Length: 629
Image (cartoon, one colour):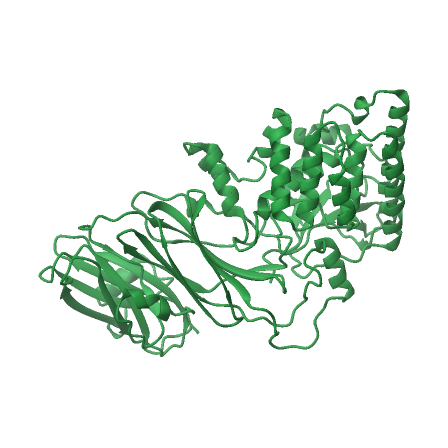
């Protein structure tokens, strides 16, 4: 399932009357109500030198103005042929940015309608005319930007790439920016990254500051986090790395998408758009935060109104790509994992990877055992089963074109049941300080177990990612969590993560644990749990420790657990075991496994808890969540 519903953007009312949102139908292409615009300073038109100012002769200026009239005429005609829907207002805005209302419409199944043939024909005519005019004014960056944008919009990516490769604009950085935009749409992420980095190196300082400013895409908490880091630039680089939706996929498509949005915004300056309003800071911000809509609809007012509105819609499946603060904001004493949840709902910015139709959450477990030279990280999960789905016929097809094909039924699979497909790609990654401390990749069968492990370097904090990806079905799943990898002094009493093993597993030692990790955290109500853990810092067999393990519901609060501990809250003894033993014969970790029965637990979420108490030390505890089905 997609992570979020479709995002809708519409212009707020710019004058009174029947039009609730959307420009009045009887205004000119750039007419606007001065009071509405001045009331939202961020929506004011950008104050930039007109593109015509670069022309060196009256003839060049006249050709440029003709190109602008042609572009304006196309957008005006586009409105006439947009798919129509009956309006009735729209939900309350989740956010207002300048003159624009933004809301998530709650429709997870929305797909764009095929573009009307008349609009396709009109765009083809416009491109032919712009090509002809460009031969007269080859150095006009505004005309060049229109050609790139409309070629990409038409799905003519090879033509757009060829044009960008032949770019002869005086400002070479614009050529690289547009080339990066096209490469991103072609899903050549490495090529896009290279082009964008060349553009950033050469662009004017003011534009560089805009394109690299984190303010548009980061919420207040993450902006504060970046500002508090010793090196804010390195911190921002780390955030971009973590925002990459899938480490298995080549390149960082979240960063290249961000640069692509800026390139799109650059091509839109002084150009007419379907919202029928001048380009301004608000349109630029919406584009950078959410991208440009993949489809447009024109809604007629109901109830006797005569106006209509134009709304831009984004494809469902976009999600929050930046990590939540709690995954990054660790304390010196904090070691326990913090799961990175893919939250739904309106976000400051969203992203839809060009190679995915859905990104799901893996159900599995991550565990750590401390070693002399690092931390052994183990991951186990069940790879998703592949049901019959819409397959991408061409890995390089433009996403908008693919969606149109899906709507038309061209790529829809037939039949039902498991789908015979190539192996899935799987990986275990550990990010530490903006670099990969672990990068393990393999191929696995769909629906089969996946167990991966690797030694991670010492680090205060990092992010672990378990991933699977099926490029053929454009589906991926992942589980990410922030956790500590700090060095532990040999005499410091500490406890490893608690790991679920396959029922009845009896590993001879920690080296065998990774091979018998349970790949699912779901269990039957009467199924015994087998678990493993390590204790560090017990110096000898004479140093005794008390071990207790029990099961409790995940939603139990502290007071409830305290009452149960005192014996007043129920039959806790039925799901509790305990023992006493000393440290290992040789200095090193004490490895132990144990089983605990489940007395016909009702379906729900639970935790198994291990508590270790040694004389002279505070109790240590570890937990592992599981679900009774």
